Image 1 (tube, helix red, strand yellow):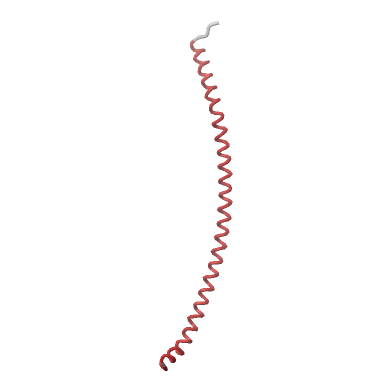
Image 2: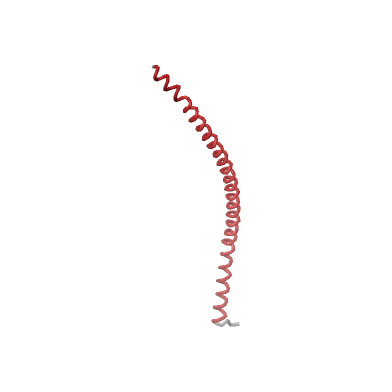
Length: 95
């Protein structure tokens, strides 16, 4: 039984392709595992960012309330200072 050069070349090409596939399968398996882990990490990151955003919104609401109260307090203090200015001026004039 004799094999022609074309058949021998085809056999070598088929064996080379089989070796290529055998070396590619573990790499593809590792890549699939890596992509799955990456997907899990991204999902966890998105959940964390959502929680942080909610916390920041709550913090900003509290900060706005505190600033409003501080502004009201400053208006009240300024009004009382205007009321006390004549008293302080009179005390200074007596001294």
